[in-house]
Length: 147
Image (cartoon, rainbow, N blue to C red; front, side, top):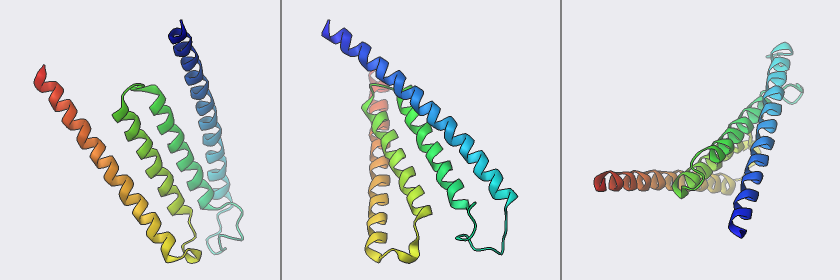
């Protein structure tokens, strides 16, 4: 009885989160299209970016927000119970978020320790992703050998 109630409530929460993520993604997509349109309409190549309210960085941030939302939706959509897949998606989301942060980071005002910290974080995430993919390949090969 408790197990059934827990499964049912978990499913309701998943569907609610999927709905919210879809609504957020649609909102971000509309915002991205509007920002991109405004960027093209008000394009001024000789004007510095700080004076232009329609900056390219806003478009890039919205683009990466949409990518992260889609990765989260992919996490909910497939392989709900596979730990390898969930971990792989979470690391991909972290790599995408770090990439977004690097693109929008003002390097002029960052000290060298921040740069080193970001580099170490990206390297550790990519190495972790590599090991998860290799582990998943090894598990798949073992399953195929036993069949």
